[in-house]
Length: 347
Image (spheres, rainbow, N blue to C red):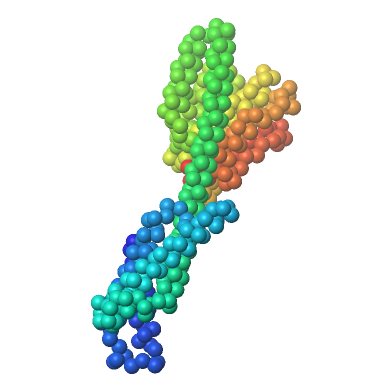
């Protein structure tokens, strides 16, 4: 409402300035009081018409979506413009009569016809076009906002589906590790493993539907998982996490490190009965974090792929960060290396 009022009364000031600058008029002969009252009343009329149009049309006055709607809205707008122009003519005649400029209201109507009626008709069409542009802009913003909200909901759903795939897989493999301890008749280790598993599950429950957690949480979760695996493999498994420069509160996608560690253990030299060393490094770079997980490849697993788990991680990263992330993996000599980069400003 304020914008409309400023526009129409600003239009009054523009008319006053044009009248003042008219070279053919003597400013001293202009009845400024009558001018301001008359033009002020007319500006008030057009302001009310504009506000009425804004409130009367929930959608655009001129609907251009289809030919039928286009002609229907055009005819309706023409009828509205004609009626309002007639009202404007009567209103102008009333002002002229009240100010004593004309002898009667009927005389004022006669003076206003047809020039002021045509002026009112085209002025109403200006308002209709302006209101149409306004509602079209609002419609565009609403559609864009709805599209962004739908995209965000779809991304959230995809991320939840990826987690729904990841967490049962992780639980299944962990229970297999505990079953292995039972078969090896190591009840104390199996009891400790169950304790570690309960800690891991508690951690998963704590995060709820959040997709990122502080690096400190992710690191503690990974250490608990490593401790559980070391109950099974003892000193044959050596995992070293090196991240001295990463702030504890730096946001990291949850369960990012655990499946990478699991890949390294499953496809590493433990499959050959040899000692497995896994190195994890995390370094800040500008506004990103660079993660690298490397392990020696088992001879009998050299031709196996890591595709499913890594594609899952790639999809999760894309859902969180779009194109502002990287995932690369492959053999580097006798090692298999996974490199991940993602922005620190996680959502």
